[in-house]
Amino acid sequence: MDSSKTSRRDVLFSAAASALIGVAARAASPAPVAATAPADAAGAFALPPLPYADNALDPVISAHTIGFHYGKHHKAYVDNLNKAVAGTPFADMGLSQIITSTYGKADQTALYNNAAQAWNHTFYWNSLRKGGGGEPPAALRQKIEADFGSVENCKKELAAAAAGQFGSGWAWLVQDGGKLLVTKTANADSPLIKGQRPLLTIDVWEHAYYLDYQNLRASYVAAVLDKLINWGFAADNLG
Ligand SMILES: [Fe+2]
Image 1 (cartoon, rainbow, N blue to C red):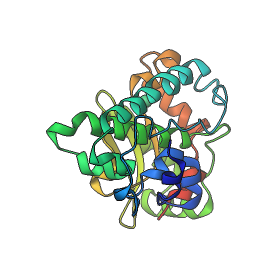
Image 2 (tube, protein in one colour):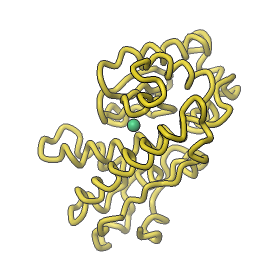
Image 3 (cartoon, helix red, strand yellow):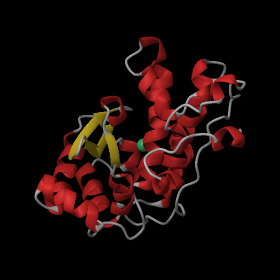
Image 4 (cartoon, rainbow, N blue to C red):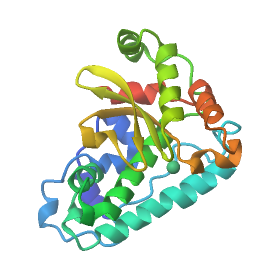
């Protein structure tokens, strides 16, 4: 990985969030000097380290699940992204620019899907923490109460979005203009393509929960919301 290039990348949403987000942080915007640099070779995008040990989320999410989800699925998205981007003009872009530049383009579907999944997964790991759940920080709680009535209602909307996503996808808390919204996306899709600002996400692809919960997606989502959701990360991402 070209660390000098990475150092020129702009941050994503906030310094704190960017520090956590790792490779997603380099995705914010094109580096102003990168256009004159050689295209990244394969391996230009790194799989960022998990922000915790692989057993930190146990028993809500087991180390077994993390081993496959992070070590196999997330890694595969990053590896495939690097293959798809090598030697193309997209090699000089950050992840979020690749996502918004390739969305809806039939000849760029593989690149879009792998870039979006690389971004989404890094964001997901940071949306969870050991000992999470509980009450959001005051600034976020006030916004949640203004837009949802209560934290409990916000959690209910997130749970409903997660349960209501038919097939694979993601449930999100986003900021859209000045307002907080819960939304869901299918497959690899990201709120970035709608101009929304993600605050946190829950992965509802079966690979996120099947080893621990089998088909009981609602049980996985309820446990994540009560015990793992990282409200502090969401607060850091507020615009
Ligand atoms: Fe996933």
